[in-house]
Length: 102
Image 1: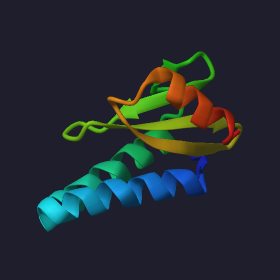
Image 2: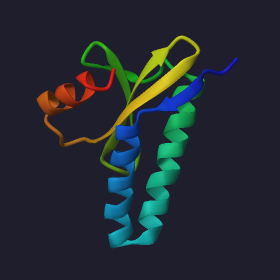
Image 3: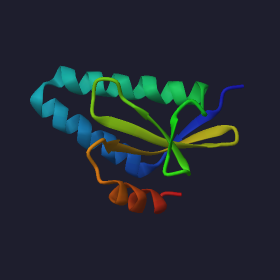
């Protein structure tokens, strides 16, 4: 049985911000970002332990053509997507954001 996916509200907001940024440049870029995010989410749903460890507590996958990562935690029969972070974010900032989400 495949785990289910839950998405933290902040992760939804972060994805929307990234989508809006790319939509202002080119609507097709925004569509590609959303498609890559969906592929990454389905991947972690199917293979929850496949993402690389992040800060010893979380796991992440990088979107192949965009500078973003999906941060998640496997939780029994579900996967909780906690964040969609830009890769240039400072690690300390990421840790502070994630602490408030678990």
